[in-house]
Image 1 (cartoon, rainbow, N blue to C red):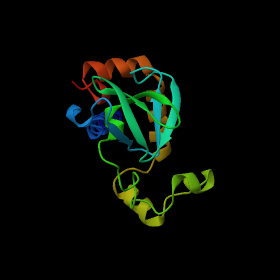
Image 2 (cartoon, helix red, strand yellow):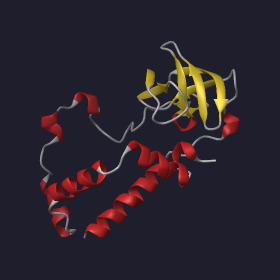
Image 3 (spheres, helix red, strand yellow):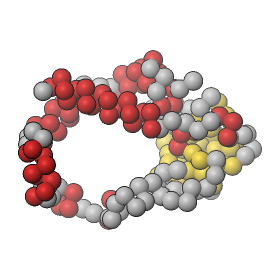
Length: 168
């Protein structure tokens, strides 16, 4: 069972990296415009995923491209200036916020009580039919495995496998 979970976690991680494909480098030009694609996009002190955050910008905020360094762009906003991985930017202003239409409640408007509520009876039945009845044990195992990874381990993996911001 642990091997199956490990494979599922690995596949999920790889899929998530694949979904975060960067835009074509030709889309962004020095002196041109870009827009943030996330509710909160971090502007970093240097071009790297572990760099300190110097500022943040909101969804669909217009940015000016100051410099391009591989898959990283140094941008300027009203809030400040910093580096952003191009996969977090759009070359045209996005019209829908991330996840629009997928949820009925904005996560920022919920609380821990609502987030920790038990599964609905239908969801519980589905979990039982598919052998997923010990969710807490799965969460504990996932947390234990994740705590073994350091940020440097993750950067080394992403770089060696050319994932996310390390794609050529």
